[in-house]
Length: 58
Image (cartoon, rainbow, N blue to C red; front, top):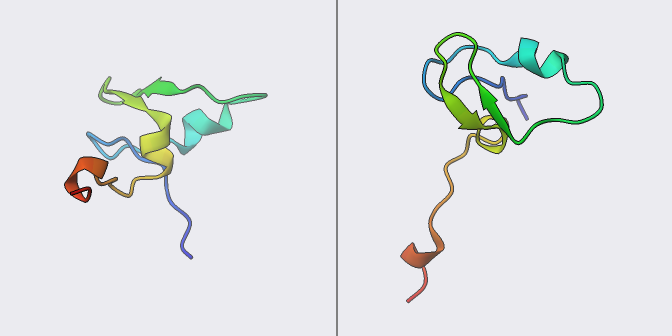
């Protein structure tokens, strides 16, 4: 399995440098230092789109 490079969802800027500054815990939300886009770290760390449960429940 290929490791995921954490990138900004908007501009694609590599967020590895930001992650390297975390010492004891990671924040839930972040801001790209390149473009200023606010994002949720869970989306950056697991970029696979999630389907909405309402689309598969009849």
